[in-house]
Image 1 (tube, rainbow, N blue to C red):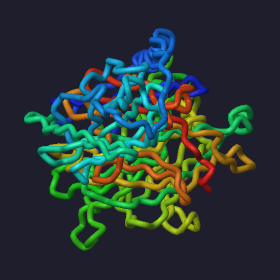
Image 2: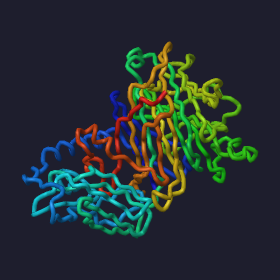
Image 3: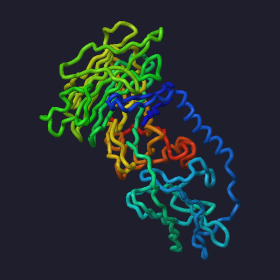
Image 4: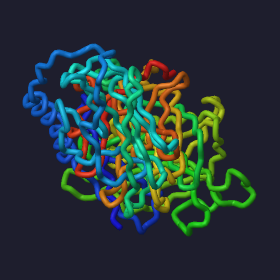
Length: 487
């Protein structure tokens, strides 16, 4: 199976973002998605908003009746009759708008004497505790309607019940799990931090740090901290680095043999990785990164697959619940147009740093946008989204350095990506602001995509789902992220 890694973003720097993971097993070949494709995604979303807002049918001119009206009727206005897939949004017609230019899992209608009932409190209950409900509003609207999104749980038979609290009337609908479900490795979830104008305008952005805390460590976890892209071609990755929990049962001669030393105990497989991609000169010839300095604790090897370049790994004793600080610095000494970059990591809050590697990169890196991400790299596919192990990373702080001053990011955005249309696109992932920073989760149970932030940016109370869906499920959720809780 060929897996695609459609990662990209066009931020205020007009950068096309792509990403790779050379830690993947050689059998996995992911193809890149061009910046043009992502322009289409973004343009499509915008076009849908314009088209839908412009073509929405006028609301019926009914005079609402009071919620206490007697003789009311509660009925289904829309139900999804498609067999459900655990860990995904239930939506039988992703490109259809069931009512009022909205796209819902379930819609009920409350009427009395043939007229809609406004302001009636509708409650929803799911029979499957592993499922999740997001309600549009607690009461019926002017058309007597109430709506929810429903994220399917694991039970083979699932029932949703809507109740009119004023009368006790209720209706139920039963769903069954699909008999054929595409296996999945879950979503990769990425953040994109933008440097402040004070750094980018000076052109002297010399370094940055990312502080993060791993919260789980399933085998084949990759918590990536420092992705940057090339100049002048922002469609090409310059480098990335982070921590992994390597599967020591796998045979991979490109990884440092110290990583799987049996004496490491619980930390066996824990590593740091710093990888740089090839670039091209003015004539289009491929130019590889060159090692400028390498500690004896680091092992380097070429990688191929999603791209080509140089991958360096070192055993690193990182722990769940303990902060890690990763620092990237531009250094002098490389012949133009190359740029020397040192990557190092600290396990004691920045007191001391362990160098992973120093490269002379074939093209200058762009420090204006930096991207951490969370993924299940090269892992075996799970039967359903809810069987994928939870990967959870907290980004505690991020800082850019202009040569004299350290500055917080100007902004951040986020998205949840898919690896291939041949796998289930899961909705059990999240990006949330917490007291400790930004929490990124993918997989597990009890973790669910919050669709609502997208609407706040589009000017609607809730998302126009067809602007963010493919033929089956939600593909991406681009959203701005609150970074006020970050250090």
